[in-house]
Image (tube, rainbow, N blue to C red; front, side):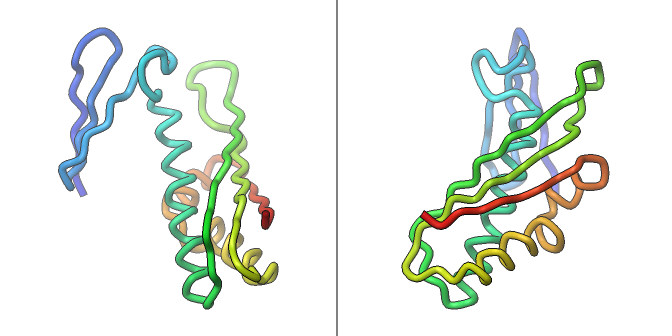
Length: 132
């Protein structure tokens, strides 16, 4: 996997993925685009959401909606690393089985989500979920 990040002026950068997609990042605290740390947080939510939806669908569950709401804490001083991240999944579906939801969410954080597993080496991570 490869990527590149190009400075375009001020504190704005454009990241380009190997698959040909681009995203703007703002190094000035997210004034005009997501900051790089916001991108990391969103990556954790995206990666784990893929696992949860895929796990539930593979288990025969009818999932209509999955929203991952992430909250994070960071160190006060540089480097301002994440110290804690919680991912709360809000799921909507037909007759979702709570045991299967718990399994899919837990396995994402502990077994499958590459982003969360990388972050988990230095960040306390937790999860929660609700069926709406």
